[in-house]
Length: 239
Ligand code: URA
Image 1 (spheres, rainbow, N blue to C red):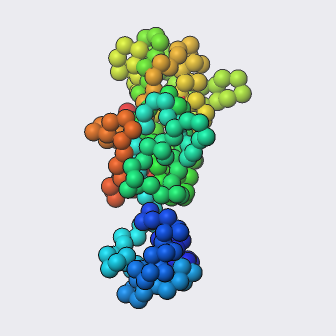
Image 2: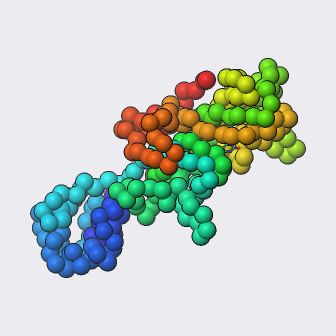
Image 3: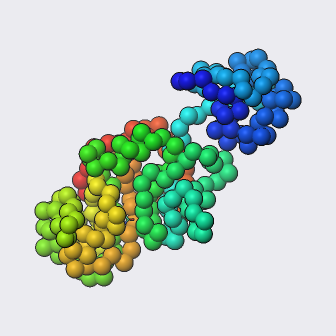
């Protein structure tokens, strides 16, 4: 990796603000591979340098992968002037400036949203070409039928818009699971609308082969396990 300024490297790790880090460096509290860093501009390779503050080693992590159970009523955006976002819900220990939600859930959709600073993984997860499937549970305003299942399986066209074939499984009264690998705006709602049903509530349950951790209450989050970071790009699917 390219060399970076010490203050930039350390402020990316949520240790302290950039100005606080600068004054920590000036007080001689930071070491790089055991040598005191004298100026914030000193450059190091963050992947191959061991930093310490007051002798305590910093566990440098380039990427974070956070599973959040998004509550209804919160925006999946990085920031908003008026409304609360999923980033605002992150606990102090997981706050970093470069985090963003990978993809969008509507304000009134709940469930699994991935928050990360890994743009490449996010792109792979979201591109319909990658065929990473996302599973949703939808509650609708009417009973669903085998005709609806068939219509979804053939792919749906609404005016100019078309949606790829999708698997739907009826799971109860007015309730179904649907799996899609595209992420078009209001996609699930529009697909149901095309068959004359309205989505009353929507929850994302799975991305790739990673299930929403049901022990997370709405608004709570946790980091993905190493295996889950791999499984989130899994091409396996099926309800
Ligand atoms: N489809 C929708 O209609 N809304 C979402 O939030 C996600 C998928």
